Amino acid sequence: MKDEKDYIQDITEIRSMMERSSKFLALSGWEGILAGIYALSGAFVAYKFFNFNPDKILYTIESGDATAGLTNVIILAIVVLILALGSAVLFSNKNAGKRGEKLWNPTTRRLLANMSVPLVAGGLLILVLISKGLIGLVAPCTLIFYGFALYNASMLTYKAVKILGFVEIGLGLISAYFVEYGLLIWALGFGVVHIIYGIYMYYKYER
Amino acid sequence: MKISINGLHKAFESRIRLGIMSALAVNDMLDFNSLKEYLDLTDGNLASHIKALEKEEFIGVEKSFVGKKPNTKYFMTKDGRKAFNDHLEALEKFIKSGRPI
Image 1 (cartoon, rainbow over the protein chains, first blue to last red):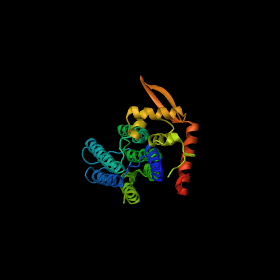
Image 2: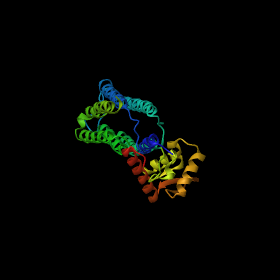
Image 3: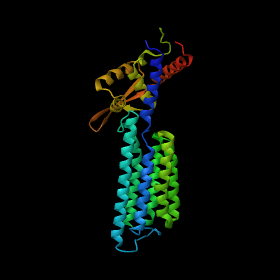
Image 4: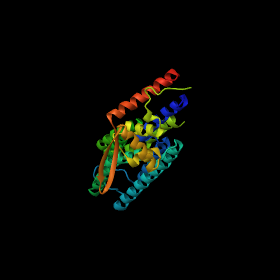
């Protein structure tokens, strides 16, 4: 026979299992804040040191060796991406540990599968754009497809991620029209918006 | 203090079985390995609890192949959902009244 304490424990377990098996809740605000800082630094370096500021859809870097310049920007972008992903894994893992869960579980795998479809499609499209010299459209496409991935992921995590997705898609569309502000809007979307989102998540769930 | 198990189904006395039902309540289907990971159980332990729930016809099985590997997926049956909901309601009543049922 069980007593009242046991039944309360039963309910706690039911809740926790429902949550764990359907939602990825190990996100940390620090992931957003750090990703934002990396993005802002990356955009600054690209602009200041690599003279990268695509103002037309068909764009080449004007000073110095254009091909080498573009390669530098691509390497920089990959470094920013790896830093952001690395921090995300690190902080999510810490957060999952705090919740008494494992980070790598079927829900996490489902989340990654959901995100990977738009991200891979977007990545391939960006390679096509680079190969055709349509550099001005690269920044808008990263914002739009990243927004799709967030929107897709939001069903399995906090609702704030859905809003973040919409904001990124919106900024992507605006920057596709105003190509001359592409890098600036990219810095706004991946930098400032991520930092605001991160601070919001931190105050809401971690303090 | 003795309490009757009115409305509280016997099959759900085990917390592991409650866990299986909770996970299946919010997922259309889950395979054996996913359940194993969520509940952190051994194969044999999970299999025996699944068998018990299958016998009550609270969960159903769908067998298929992924390549050459057999893949067994479990889902909650209509009866299972009803029994689980009744169980939750009974728990809720119990907690609210603060008295044995």
